[in-house]
Amino acid sequence: MRETKLTRENDCWKGAFSAMASPCEVLAEGVGEATANQITRAVAEEAWRIEDKFSRYRDDNIIYRINHAAGQAVSVDTETSRLFDFADELYRLSEGLFDVTSGVLREVWRFDGSDNLPSQEQVERVVARVGWDKVSRAGDAISLPEGMEVDLGGIGKEYAVDRCVQIAAGLTEQSVLVNFGGDLAMTCPRADGAYWAIGRLVTGRDEVADEVAGFFELYKGAIATSGDANRYLLKDGVRYSHILNPKTGWPVLKAPHTVSVAAPTCLQAGMMSTLAMLQGGQAQAFLEAQGVDYWID
Image (spheres, rainbow, N blue to C red):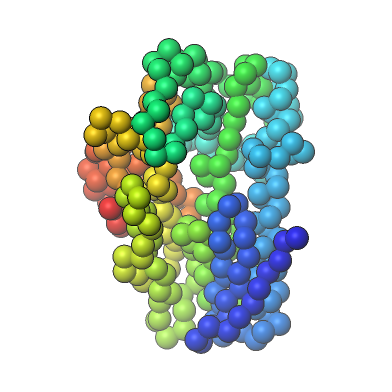
């Protein structure tokens, strides 16, 4: 059963729930308990709606229908079409490194901390089924070659944060922070120029657990974080992160453990943090060239 919990924390209300495999929280200042509860519930309902609609783990949504259409065209609604438009933009901006069809690579990669790497032949068989450029779109319809899949998980949580911020802003003029597992955004500045303080989680290395390394001080906009989340393989002294190059089917080497980026919206921040991770050892140079505020570990 999906539930929300509301507690008083210092000078604000804190709503909590789970969605998209993440702990989610809503912080609201300057409102009463009834309004705080209304905001929390509205945010949770939207997060759950998006999760149900776009999760690849369900067998009753649009993603399932597309992935199991055996090459036939499937009509999609405006919201889904716009997310595919954004995926297409990311594919072009990254020169093919961000690809929502790359999820099938999980068939040969198991990032369980072992030294079990797939063979080149195994990778090549699966990577042949990857490539956003092989997807056909016409009007409101999309079709994939049989055996291919789409997965919007790479942008879904950031999209959900931005949607929920819009909903919260419609319920109060006071500042509200929406934080979904470290991807977060706020509706408007806090009273008296204060900031929201959010623990900056650094992904643990190898067997070391995640830890909080200081705090973000967010005055406006959004922050998104990408990291390897302790998913890796280790063979002959080389650490293989779960960040995969969809062109080769192999992990991006020398990628940072964690990249966080600040931007006006969570989608924009997530785009930059994800693209930076895909640059591997050139992540910091990429971020410097973009002129964004970032934190890298």
